[in-house]
View 1 (cartoon, helix red, strand yellow):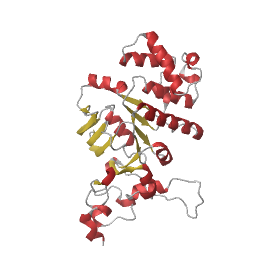
View 2 (cartoon, rainbow, N blue to C red):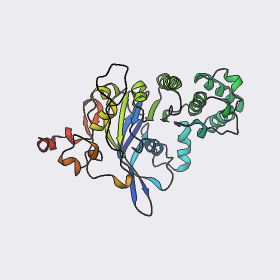
View 3 (cartoon, rainbow, N blue to C red):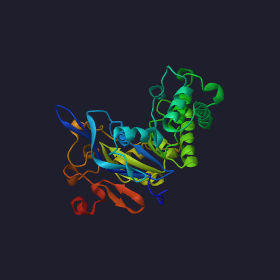
Length: 331
């Protein structure tokens, strides 16, 4: 995957919310890339900035939130500077969105077929008859049984898992290059979760699409992602291949998340638990934001913000434990 040129590049992305009381920095210098056909899992606790990153890439942040600096490139073209009208053509056609609650993505007053046909015709030059045939093909591809018959059904006539498949079909309408899936399996039972994850993985593999998979569930990340980006308090703290991260995460927060994944193997010790909670945007501590919860913190952690340190294979970690500058201070 890493040999391919990146489809999506995010460079030093900063998002702030400006209120009458203060300016709150919700994303602070986020940088990563995703190659065609690659699935990047973005993980962290609630409030880490995962969903906000997806919204920033697709330019769906609502005031008072705004991108104040950084770049977002899709296939080498900056999209963060496009006009609102030009961005509407990108969103849906080149970037597909899958949200966690399909009922908020589907209009309950219209049959699903009408909604898919309307989306297809908004982005592709097709007649209504051609678009309807394409909609039936998409419903079949995502596993809706008897798609020709069910295309006239309303959202409430589908189960939660089937509605999520419809939303995925909607996201695929215009053959996007990138899918941003924001907690796509949260409201589904375990069996249906596995079906949806396998479907997303197959679609990325078969179509060569890139996917940014946002979740707080490390089991979901381990299931289908190629690489993992761990976020904490609006910052990226570790980035690496899923297989390596699962067994040898370097940042104490990432290691804590990985250590909390349950397995079927017999355990003699309880699962790891990270003490404390994510800081509010109004109370992010100086230095490393994780240091009040970290049992490995030392002097520089309370004062100096750690920068991402890159190593071979595209691995990166933002932790003073691995910064040669502070090795003497630690010893």
